[in-house]
Image (cartoon, rainbow, N blue to C red):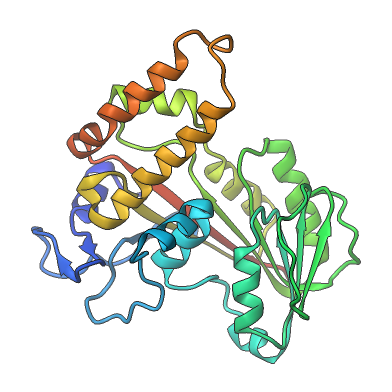
Length: 309
């Protein structure tokens, strides 16, 4: 059985504001628990226990927030899970492992991991030039397409994949190649944020239509992983509020929407779609109030799949 929207709303309303350490008013008398559903899926509700130590806090100043907006999926995922990965390989990473960051975009994740696990070797692959001049001994950067990867079979202990906007065919190619180059007993971990928001009013539905892709690949990806009969498959979903109703985190995600909107507008002209730029501005003017009224939220996914020995 899955989790109904009404149940999600009740749990999301129990969000704790990490910024000031206080809980919002709620009918729940304890922190919401992660809830297992089909395929070993569990939901993570923002906040966690009041007793938990916050290793990766929310940004505390304008410079930190600017960095977050440039690579929000990384920073938000790290904050929600309080970790850079969910696959159970920390001991191996400390001893020394081979790790591939596939489709990295901005390689923030790799640089943090390379610093934390200096005995491990990290390879970064993206099809576009990677914007960095690094001098880190345990990082190798490769510009290459994300299929037909130039690596031998059974090479990496962890393949970490962050993808967005890929077709089903692209996903199949990436999954096939990731499986090939992962060692027996190694892990493939996918991270993706749903491009479309949930519980939207009319203005946010326009946002979904204009800015987001037509659908989310998260369910399709889960089905693709299931078909490969991984002996150990996990799927975790973090529910993230959008807008002022979600306090600090919701405000940050709303700022990210504005950040994306500026990029979209910079690439558009009135000849593309007459009136579209003004329409996008109207969406953002109304969006925060609409998010609060409808309890709009986004979903961030982590899939962890272990290859057979």
